[in-house]
Image (cartoon, rainbow, N blue to C red; front, side, top):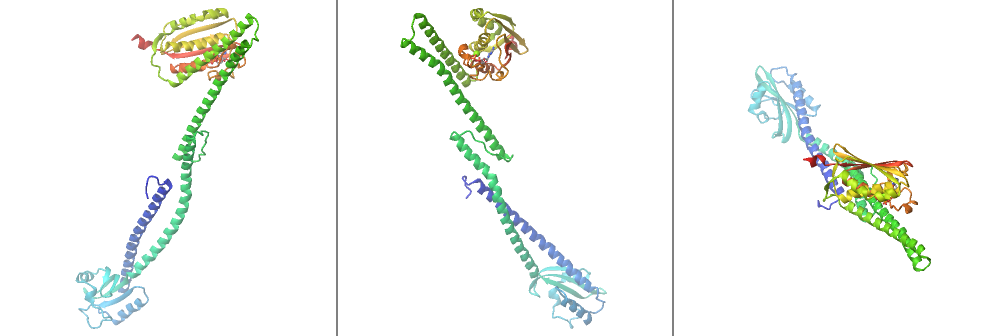
Length: 471
Ligand code: ATP
Ligand code: MG
């Protein structure tokens, strides 16, 4: 019955019902025990009181017929049985009942009575052939036990009472159980149904349906489980959406250059293009588009690589200032062509730990933007400073700037401020997202500030290893 597959509600049912029955049994036996004890005790004191009261009427001397009758009269008016017994040793002749004194009272009890004590008795009494509760008080005159008043109640009447009580108890238990079962059913349903709901939701997720939201009302463990499940499903859903969007973007980015290449090639093939100069122009366009495709592919590969690997294994110490100068040298021709002035202020101290190719990629992507988005004539300034255990690289340009609405998004994949213009500029919006990933990998930070038509300032903070290096 109690196997592993048993449903939770059945297990809870058993537990609760068992607990109810056990506590009732316990309460019942306890109450029976106390009731019996207290009740019997009370009867005993009542009997003693009754006998004592009667005993007070005993005037002393021999027990008279008058006194015996008086007790008899009392007996007829009362629930308990009462009678007087003369001391047979003194007066064996005129007994009102045929009662043998000695069978009623033992020698020990006689002694107690003689000392003036009342006696309480409980148990089977041979003389009456009954279980009884009894009280005996002595009638003493001048140290002589003239007789006793004996009063008793058959125990049957007590057990009868207890049985009645038990019956009432049972009825109450039964009623309680019905109410408890009714309430339990409702309560268990409320408790179990969210678990069932979570189970169904989990199945749906495993079938690929991530857009699920469980309705959680309670704040208990189950409620929190549902909440955690919602969060998990939501993040999986978002990740899934992101992937889909990414793929769509990739397809979109590929489509345009490919259609250009196909169009131009077709035109050349069909001989529509006349004249050598025209042909050269078309070939140049094809070359530009294939370059664009190549760059896109390279960036995508880079991103995929950055996504999959976390630990940079082949890092080496890099003297950052020197490294930057070497990179900048490659840009001299294009800077000259676009009439962009370069201002450099490099602190020679910072030494960073990184993979040269990747650090160059960071610089390249940012310088590429600064040059690309400075239309003509302008200044790019580069400064590097050591600050405690990190260094700050600031790249400032006087280019077209980034509108405030776009600024928070420029580091997202495929995000471009001016999509129409970017065909001319040649960007696909991956540059800064790669930079962001690379800087994260270096455990650094990047901030971009920009004012439209004024310029852009990119600040990169990277941890340095100067102290370690000097040791
Ligand atoms: P890619 O770098 O992949 O060739 P991209 O330059 O368009 O393409 P990002 O480098 O990620 O992509 O830059 C995102 C967008 O932010 C750019 O399209 C551009 O609009 C804007 N942006 C970035 N840097 C600057 C800058 N220095 N000045 C003005 N706008 C910038
Ligand atoms: Mg760029």
